[in-house]
Length: 113
Length: 112
Image 1: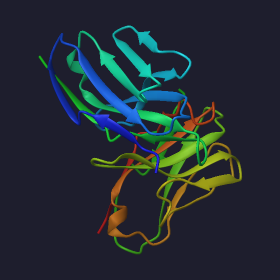
Image 2: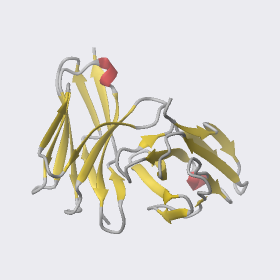
Image 3: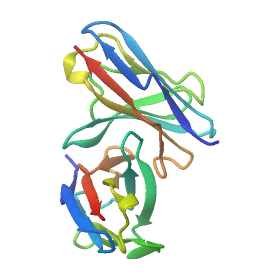
Image 4: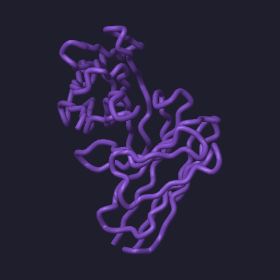
């Protein structure tokens, strides 16, 4: 079936460094790609999303890039801070078989101070 | 405050004992959904509802039921829970179809 692969599964960075999480998707018709942040004991929270008609979107220290030809998209966090430590999920809007979000398996990001 | 609430937050039960997890949103959202989260598998959709009285199966609907009698509520029902339904469950809602979903705080269910 349609799926989303996410890498790496865990990522440790030093405070102030950049972090990059990558996802690939299989449904070429997908046109919406959100990223969610899940802090310990809480539900996922939407932090940024991108639609297929743009290649990059930024929001302060967070950016997402999309390569539709290669069917992959990435989350970039610059100047990481301890409060960025969380689990990050990517997702793709699956259009075939009904509108639904398909999530990646998640990346545990640890920012060491 | 705009939010999605779930109750209970934690539940330990035994195999076969029917249970209901409630979900309520105060944002007048039409779309609501249930997910389960398991280690290494991310979030998998159980059921979703595009509007009142309209529900449909997600990827892992076996063993679950839902109803959508009111716009704000979307309860998840486990008629006969089994240990493989031990998981972390999230309810979500959205006012723009499946995009921009707001998630509840989660319900951790253990079935022994």
